[in-house]
Image (cartoon, rainbow, N blue to C red; front, side, top):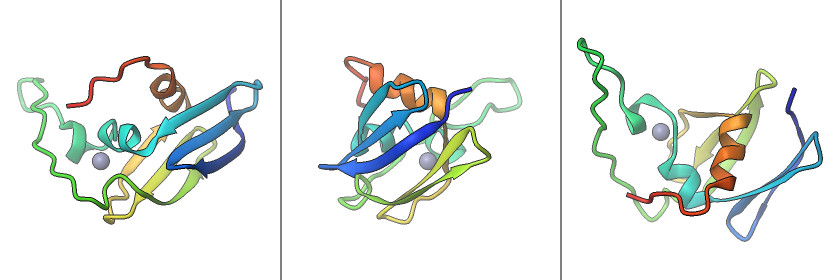
Length: 105
Ligand SMILES: [Zn+2]
């Protein structure tokens, strides 16, 4: 199972060394825009349709305040604007770093 060997902030990118030797670099802005929490990505309504909420960002939104591993499978990320509900599964973090051109909205 994938786990984090080393993690740190390098020039406003989250740098992660994985237990299998792989490395990921994720710009904080990409990390925030991909925040998987319900207030960023929306929740299915009664018909199962997911309505994407309108998310507003500030100049503080794309800076990292802190992070901590959760349950050995995910990373809880807190941003400088106080947003702290994003729980990023390790596989998701890795996928984010491998997207060549993430669709910034
Ligand atoms: Zn969020």
